[in-house]
Image (cartoon, rainbow, N blue to C red; front, side, top):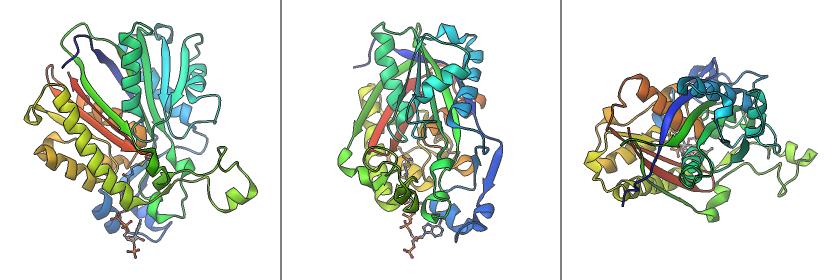
Length: 329
Ligand code: ACO
């Protein structure tokens, strides 16, 4: 059943660091090749934050752009919600650092951590807060600077990730647009397959944890791959069904950009032509929580988000977590 009350995306902002790291650059850093990276992942280049840039720096730029596009001031927002896996600090939250950089105070601010699925989890949480009347507007920011928690000597992970940020201003919809359905889930029993082991209470930072390189992302890529294909495919189809739609009514599919082969496998389940599946992994790599807002922004820039168009967003990430949302423009 489609809800009568819905939230909508009032505006989108993004920020991408200037520095571009190509596969050819990586060939000089680890034992890899442009050919391997391109055929196994679809990635050609990615953006990397400058040395002094931290997660909140990227997030605040995306936030400012979203606020400007919405014609709002920071004070018009009731909550800053940040989805990230690479916070500035374990605490305070990156949301609080972003609030400070926006030069504002008073509104609530907190982080949400759900692997690469964070932006969709954030949408679902925001929807609950807006439709229950707790918040009028939420500034949802998805930002990751994985380059600072990547082991640049590990070719199995360092070729995959990029840095970036996206932000949505969310509020209740007064027209036909808005989120028609969501579906979400998690399986914590598979957590070890994709994790950053140290720095928390499990392995507090020590000389040994640094020596053992436990402060970097560790991933069993092929296991993550299999689970991502299964869970993203199922979640996207379930969300479409919950929206009361058939899969051939979907105009655009925005899958989390982790691997072109995963994207193609999901597109196949939808029988969608290549031009209706959003792919930008070649330019940005896996920007974790930022992939979906950046892809949606690019679709909007291309003039494709015409009123009534149906967009399905689907993601998968550490946890494992997964989610899918159906949006009517
Ligand atoms: N260059 C050259 N060779 C490489 C590289 C590289 N960069 N990386 C791995 N290899 C080698 C491996 O060592 C292995 O060699 P071997 O057969 O001699 O042992 C071979 O390539 C095959 O390795 P696989 O890991 O089996 O390769 P696969 O086809 O699975 O591709 C990849 C690896 C790209 C990581 C893929 O598994 C993948 O994309 N997984 C999903 C990642 C993902 O979805 N992450 C999402 C969440 S991210 C988040 O939440 C932060």
